[in-house]
Length: 260
Ligand SMILES: [Fe+2]
Ligand SMILES: [Fe+2]
Image 1: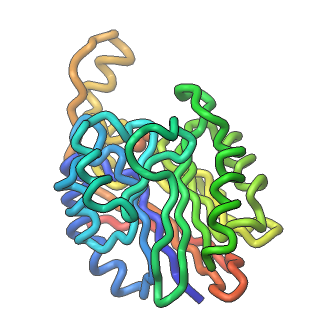
Image 2: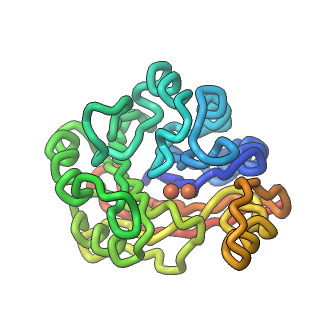
């Protein structure tokens, strides 16, 4: 069995600092074989840089995935150039954009395919993530032992439908983007481990990572104040998928939340 860890959106300095502090020991203590971290909000104000990509990889991530904020900061292109197989952006974005939408990495000699996709409901319309996944699988299925997908989407319905759409064809699907974990982790009938959202890594005393005063000001008083990220009560949230490397089937999904 392989133990695959997925960590939810790392938000701002607080999230990066907490990940760097907690992830190495968590990987060791839990005998994790492969780790994917969503880093789309790692820079304060969203996006990611080369330096922060390196911080996340050094902390133990094998692969960094992104989402709708993938291209918010231009520095991400340096990360794609430096680590073309270790940081990926949604595959269903325009193919002419920088970066790759899937990658193949190694875990204990097994080939792990990771796919990143972004949803279309309540987000900017992009190419169909379902058909894009079919295309990614056409390439990956004969070249990998295990396939994991980070489906970065807002609507729970779209994420759940995606899970069933690929059930039996991939080992694990985890949702990201809402920064709020869901309690619906399960193994689908075809053997795909699934959870609608794995939550976030960063300040929990916040509104999805944003300072609560700023969020209240924007929502209640229509203040257009700039985003400012919270830094209190950090947590690292995610899920562990136990996968049979010989069949690619998932045996169990467990939600995790690490606090101080
Ligand atoms: Fe996010
Ligand atoms: Fe997002």
